[in-house]
Structure formats: C-alpha cells, structure tokens
Amino acid sequence: MPLVLYNTLTRKLEEFTPLVEGAASMYTCGPTVYNFFHIGNARSFVMSDVIRRYLEYRGYDVNFVMNITDVDDRIIKQAIDEGIDASAVAGKYTDAFLEDIARLGIRPATANPRATDNIEGIVSHIERLIAAGAAYTVEGDVYFRVSAFPAYGKLSGKRLEDLQAGARVDADSRKEQPGDFALWKTAKPGEPSWPSPWGAGRPGWHIECSVMSQKYLGDSFDIHAGGNDLIFPHHENEIAQSEALTHTPLARTWLHFGFLNIDNEKMSKSLGNFFTARDILSMYSAETLRFFYLQTHYRSPLNFSDDGLDAAAKGLQKLQGLYDQLLTAPDGEGIFDVGPWEQRFIAAVDQDMNTPAGFGVLFECARDANGLLRSDVGMTANAKAALRDFLRRSALGVFGVLHETETARADSSQIGALMDLLIAVRAKARADKQWGLSDFIRDGLKDIGLALEDGKAGTTWKRADNA
Ligand code: AMP
Ligand code: ZN
Image 1: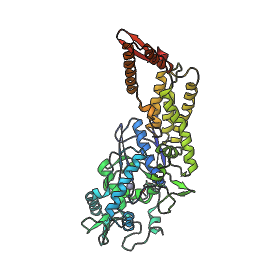
Image 2: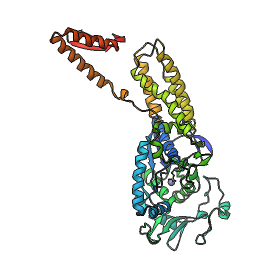
Image 3: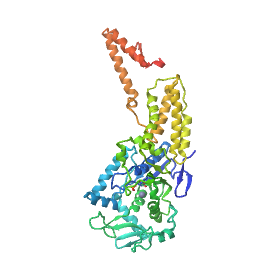
Image 4: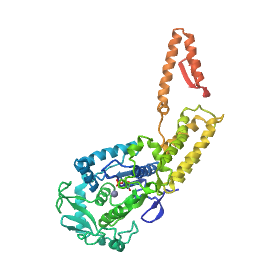
C-alpha cells in the first residue's frame, strides 16, 4: 500500500510517487532568524522532520533542505532594538535555531542554505525574470509582474482579479498592479545591502526560496512544506517566480501544517501570545513536546495548554516503560508476533501521515505486549528483541518520542565485560582457596538469573532460564 498525502495544490489525497524511484526530495521553509522561535514554529519544524523520518523509514533516500531567512525587515528592526547590526542579529539567532532544533530531536537537514550566501543566484534569477518580461524595475526596486503568470493563484485558490482589486494588498503607486510583489528592495541608509544591476539593495523574502530550492533540489522536486500561513502569499509567489522561468511544476506535492493555537488564536510573535521552544524545553522533554504535537493530525489546529503537555508526558511513560522493560525483563516462553503490528502501523501512517492513528496502533500493541510480559509465560528473548526493534524504528526512529535509558545504554558488550570480570574474581578466589567467596559469587549471580558453568576450557555464563 502506498503513502498517500493531501496536496494543497490539487486539494486531493494523492499517492506519493517520487520523481526518482526510491528517492524523495523535500524543501521546507525555515525560520526568519530575528528571535528565538516559538512552539508554533516548532510544530511545523517537527512535522517536517517526522515526514522526512517516515519517508526514510519507508525506504526512500531523502534529500531534505530547510532554508534560513537571514535578511528581512524583521531582522533589521530587531537589530535597531538590540543596538547591534543586522548580520549579528541573524548570526546569533541562526546559532540559537540550530541549537534548538537539535534539542527538539530534529535530524540535521541535508542542507540549511542561507539567503545571504545566495545573493548572486538571486540577482541572476531576477535578471532572467526581467528578461522574460515577468518582472520590472522601479527606481532600484524590482517587482514581479503577476499578470505575466496566468496560473497565479493556483495554489491558494485566489483569483487574480480579486487580488488586483483587493483592499488587503496595499496600494503602492510604484507598482503596475496592486498584486505585484517585491523581488529586490533598494537599500535605505544603514540597512544591509548587496550590489546589483539596479543599485545596492537586498532580496525580497519569496525569491530566496525559489532560488535555493532550485539550487539544491532542481527545477522540480517532490515535496514542499510549511505552515498554513505560507500558502499565500509566500508559496504562491514562489511558484510564480520559479515556474515563470522553468515552465515545470516547482513541487509536485504541497503540504501545509495547521497552526498551534493558544486560546483558539494562532500563536505568533506579533500577537505576543507565544512561548519559545527554549522555555518549554526547560520544563518538558523534547519527546513530550513531540508526542503532544503528533497526537493531532498535522492539518488540524492544535490548542496549546499545560494540561495537554502534562497528559502527553504521562501517556508517553507507558511506551517508554515498555521500551525499557523489554531490555530488562527475564526471558520467558511467550511468542509475540510483531509483524502484523508493523503492517498496521504503516497502514495507519500511510494515510496522509496520520500520526494519531499510528500512535493508536503503538499503544494497542504496547497493551498486548505488557499483558504478556507480566503474565507467567513472559516473552521469549527473540520476541522481546523484535518488539524492541520495531519500537526503536517507529516510536523512536519515526516519531522521536522515546529515548535510550541508562539501562539500555549498558549494552550487551558491557554486561559481557562485567561478567568476565566477575568470573576472573571468582577464579582468583578459587586459586586462593577462598571457597566461601567463590560460592558467594556463583549463588549471587544465580539469584539474578545468571548461571556459571565450569568446564575444561574455563568458566562460562548463561542466562539461568536457558541453562
Ligand atoms: P517564520 O519564522 O515566521 O517564517 O515561520 C517559520 C515556520 O513556522 C513557517 O513554516 C510558519 O508557517 C510556521 N508557523 C508560524 N506560526 C505557527 C503556528 N502558530 N503554528 C504552526 N506553525 C507556525
Ligand atoms: Zn519559503
């Protein structure tokens, strides 16, 4: 059964068929680095990460690119507020972003290109748009000519006529049409700027994603993702800027994430109703926060609350507890066939990344497994290992909601080394005729389920159940 995704562009659920068999290319709009990001942004970043991890779990070789917007009006404003220059603001919050996404368990992207490292490519893309009649200059600014791209509006469903007449697009007399948007902005004194054929200036926000996605993923790639607020104008404009030159679909599947709300209002910097990911991670684990997000489908809104996070922390203990126990529980006789559970897990998540349904399967599986583990028969060593491997690849590998505890880290090689040491101590005791100490070691190990066997070649050990 194939993975099915809801494509904003076609407004349909579609089978995921990548451009190159066995590979998947994905671009996610990253942060504008003017401050620490909040847990609303984090929901979108985590969701991108989980899609990437799931594609890998399903066997795709994933090329995952997330840009960093490091030149923008908001960065310039923050620089004035902090009394430092704009590049210092961007540098500081880029570092903070990379630190925080690592703490959130987000796997490193294949590339995190920055707008300021791609100015040359941006300038040349704009030059080509001007040459193609899709852009025009006005006193050092360059605008995209929306009327030159008849498909404008295909992603958001907005009609060009409505946009041109719309009151929400601020009337700028310098533009030919109100719906036209900036590709290049002439620099005001003190603002960061780069030379260009139109004078010193800086790129608009949308153009950087067209240029960087093309540079790293080609004219056409599989998945483009971001929060719902990016559908219009950001992604609509990316399509126009790219496709006006390439005449091929920029991305085949467009995925958009629902908002994290607070009191049913979008969490956002401008409304001031936000918590930074940093602050929340000082109170809750990354695993808890991820589980809190993933219990809701990515397209649905999710309301933030402390109670929700507390409940997530509590719920997760059951899965983590089982994961740890599978390592420490004694070997038993009970068979547990993990295969059908994995099939059900895949069938659930394949339905448009239905993470809540995926968790439903994992928790039902955990309930059954716990019942068997606690019964007299227990579980065979093989069954425990197979279930642990499934949880390691699903709950830990795809969702990132489990961690390896200290017990788990004490891997079999350490236990083996410890046993070798005890056997050596006992051999020394026997050589010294300290029979009491020798028996004390053997009996003590037997009590914890480990049996020593003295043979011609020396002493070996086994789990008592198998002895
Ligand atoms: P920004 O740094 O504002 O460009 O946002 C980075 C990412 O976070 C984008 O994909 C936004 O769509 C997303 N985003 C912003 N606010 C929220 C929110 N409240 N809930 C979910 N995603 C959000
Ligand atoms: Zn973007």
